[in-house]
Image 1: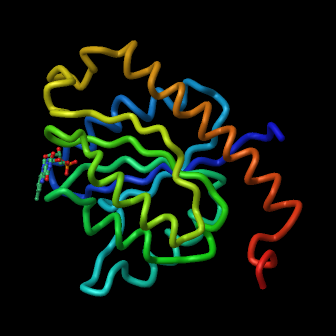
Image 2: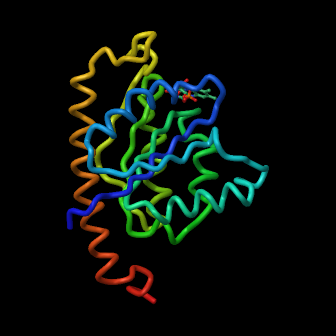
Length: 190
Ligand SMILES: Cc1cc2nc3c(=O)[nH]c(=O)nc-3n(C[C@H](O)[C@H](O)[C@H](O)COP(=O)(O)O)c2cc1C
């Protein structure tokens, strides 16, 4: 199957002054440049949070975007060796719409490049019957990797890593889309 895929780009940080916007300034044009995806964006900065998670309108919006998506690209920093609470609230807002869909990561942070956050997310997504793929584009000491205008110092290397990740995410997205169409996932073990 080679239909156009819908990829949900999910940001983990909603912090004011977040570095996520620098990552987005590099990543979003790169994704558009592949020319083969419809990108939908889920951004904590555009959602409303309550002590219990997303408020109802935000949760409904996020659930419908997750339902539409064939695959997910999660862009997450690392906070105290974990992923941000805002990202967990987004993940927890629904269950079935995640099922049998692939997930890849772009991570960033200090020395670990956000990889400790990613490893924890793999455990979370197993519970959601989602497939976290092996590849991650990881940016250690992320703030040293971009000039003040937001241009990466090693654009070729980053683009190469992203291209590899997107090829594998696309393979999984097509395979799982075909499988979901052939057999409804929630009927497999009903
Ligand atoms: C509360 C907090 C905790 C952090 N903990 C870690 C950490 O454990 N490991 C790490 O590599 N970076 C850590 N950092 C650095 C962040 O990964 C880095 O500042 C990143 O740019 C944050 O993303 P954001 O600016 O998009 O929110 C932490 C930052 C914050 C704000």
